[in-house]
Image 1 (cartoon, rainbow over the protein chains, first blue to last red):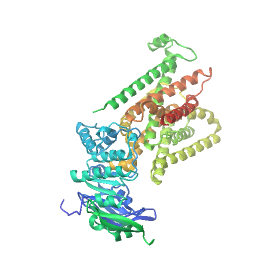
Image 2: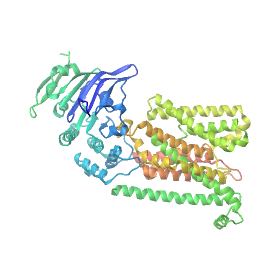
Image 3: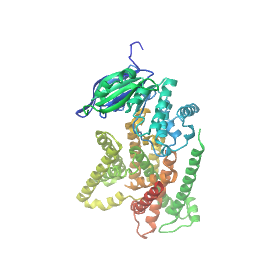
Image 4: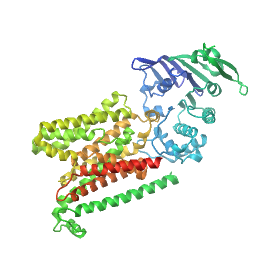
Length: 268
Length: 335
C-alpha cells in the first residue's frame, strides 16, 4: 500500500441514523493499532452504534468506515471477518451448543463452502480455549456456564477467528465484579501477548482507566474527546460526558487515574 | 476430531433414526398389504415378481406408499429449514403461508387452464404460488428490517391473505370447490407411478442445495450481528434456507396437496428425540415426516372403511394433539 493510512480501522464523516433521528453526526474516529481503546459515554450517546458501525453491522447514512485503507462496504464479508471480529452485547447462539462447538463457528471465515474442520482448526481452538482458561469446560453446554464463563466462551469464538482487531460491545455488563475483572484480564492478555487491537464499549470509568490505553468519549452522537486514558480522565471530562461531579485521584496501587463520582452536576 | 459426548450423540441419533426407518418400513409394508383386498406378506412379495396381485400392488398401492414417504420427507425437511431460517420453532411452511400460496397457485392454474392441461399446469401453478409467497415474504419482511420476528409475522399475514383469496375463488366457482377441498386438505389418493417419478426427480434435483442448507442450518441459530461478524451474510443465509424450504414444499404440495402441518410436527418431534444439532435433526426430521404421512394415510384408509379420509386431515387430527403432548413433554423437561 502506497498511501498513508492513519490506522487499520478508522472512520470519516460518519453519520448514522434510524429514520429522521441521527444517532451519530459527522464522526471521525481513528482506532490506534495494537492498543486497547475504550468507548465511553452516557446512555444513548451513540457509543454502541459507533462500535456496530465500525464492525459493518450498521450501514452509515453518510461517511465511511475504512479497514486497511479500503471502504469497508466495498470489502468482501469474508475478508473483513478475517480482520475484524465483533462480540455483540447480548449474543444469541443456536440451542444446545457446547463451548467447543461454539468456537468452531469462529473458523468459518477461514474455511471453504463445504470443507470440514482441519486438525489445524482444532489446534487453534484448543489454544484459544487455553488462553481463556476454558479447556476444562470445552464440552460443557453454553447454557450451563456462569455469566463470566459464557462471556469468555464468546471471546474464545472471536479469538478463534484469528482477527487482529477485536470489537466488544459492553463485554462486562451483567457480570459481577469478579467476572468483570476476569473478562478484562483476558482482554488485556490478548492485547499484551498477542498484539490484538481491542475496542470495547465500557460503562465503568475505572475499568477504562485501568485497562484501556486510549479513550474515545461521545456526547450526543458526536466525538467529545479522544486520547490516552491517563491524560483524558479528568473531572471536566466526566462532567461534560456524564453530567457528574467527581474527584480524580491517583490510583493507590497502579498510579493511573481513579475516578470517584461525587454527585450529579448541579445537585450541589 | 470428535469428543466422547459428540460420539454419544451420534450413536443416539443413529439408533433413533434406525428405529424410525424400521418403523417406516413396517408401516409401508402394511400400506401395501391393507386395502379393499387384504394381501399377505407372501402375496405382496409374489406381486413384486409379477404375481396375480401385481396390478393392485404396482399400479395402486406402491405408488401411494412411495409418494407418502417422499412427500412426507420433503415436508419434514422444509419445516426444519424454515424453523432454522426464522429461528422460530413455530415456523413451518404452513404457518408462514407458503403452502397456502402454493394452494392458491394450483387452484388458479386449474381454473385458468383446460382440464386436459392440469397434469403440468397444476405443478407449475404450485411452484409459481409458493415462490411468489416466499418472495413477497422476503421483500416485505426486509422492509421491516428483515428480523426473524418480522418475517414470521409477515408470513402469517400473507398466508391469511392467500387463504382468503382461495375461499373467494371457491365461492365464485362452486363447481370446482369439492375437488379442490380434498386437494387443499392433502391426500395421496390416486398417486401414480408418474407422480412418484416426478417427485423423485424433483427431490433429486433439490438434493445438492438440501445438503448445503443442512451444513449451514446450525448457524441460523446465531443473531444476525454474530453471523455478520463471522463472515456469513444473514440475509443470504436466511433467504437461502427459506428458498430451499420453498422448493421442497412446492414439490410436495404439487404431489399430495397442501399438507403443511407435517412441516411443523416432524422437526419438533425430531428435536425432542435427537436434539437440536442439524447433522442429527435434518435426517431424522425427514424420516419422521415420511413416517407421519405414511401412518396418516394408512389410518385414513382403514378407520372409515369403505370411505377414505384424506391423509392431510388425519395428520392434522392425530398430529395436533401429539404436538401439544410434545410441548408438554418439552416443558416438563425444562422445568
